[in-house]
Amino acid sequence: MSTRTVLQEGTAAAEARAAAALTTEELYRELLRRIGEDTMRDGLAETPGRVEKAMAFLTQGYAMDVATVLNEALFEVEYDEMVMVRDIEFYSLCEHHLLPFFGKVHVAYVPSGRVIGLSKIPRLVEMYSRRLQVQERLTTEIADAIVEAIAPQGVGVIVEAQHLCMMMRGVEKQHSATVTSAMRGVFKTQMQTRNEFLSLVRHGGGAEI
Ligand code: ZN
Image 1 (cartoon, rainbow, N blue to C red):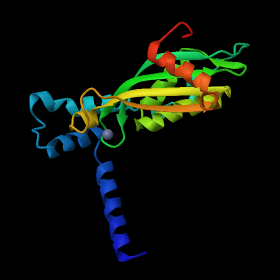
Image 2: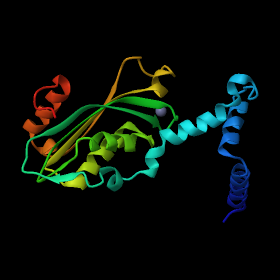
Image 3: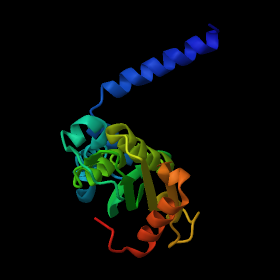
Image 4: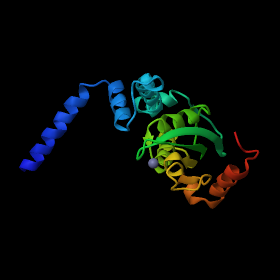
């Protein structure tokens, strides 16, 4: 180990110790100070405590797991047509800037003997979106969790989102949306299934559950 590495580790350890000596609230107060604010003025006095609570809420997905979220809401059925839950609203934080990205998730699957209770799919979306995320991973995590839970014939997930980190910094036009998709099983291999899904996402329609 070089002297430099030892020094760096020494510094990191010292910083970690110093940070550990502060409460989360004090850390947020320090951040406010560093952006040049008067942390004692009326409007900001309670802000560090509020930010701590807000961040705990927005990242509560870390304390949840698929098994608990889906808790026994898996059912045996004969049904083998497409099941779809459209327009699931979500709010997440991008892991690169800690700024919100938000939009809608559309989830569909074709069962193979088992289905998931319909209310559990939005809960799954919530669990993964209340973590620091990138849109691509959010999309694939939802699809893979469903594959794992019920081994369906296939799953399709589409996420449409707007990213404040791009909009507020002027990187992106205000109204453009980023669209990501994850297709598994028959949604990948059968054009007809995939097209049915895409057309339901675009136009809605009777087969929606
Ligand atoms: Zn970002």
